[in-house]
Image (cartoon, rainbow, N blue to C red; front, side, top):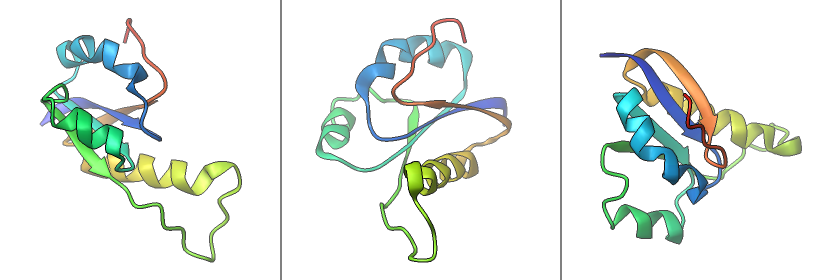
Length: 102
């Protein structure tokens, strides 16, 4: 079990991919929690995401929940990513962000 996992959540964005080699040097467990799309499935088939675990979420919202500001989807993708982590601690980021000094 690694000590810290990196969970990246949100709608698919390739923005973070430029930092993937750095993230792999820092984290043993990298999880992307997003929604399946043609773009994601195409990238998966290239092998670029080797070593990254994918968590695909559906976009169903129970009628009793409010999704103002997409809060339900943000919470759902974050929680599902954290649940998939094989570590005691998680650093959570978004797919439309990237950090070279993490």
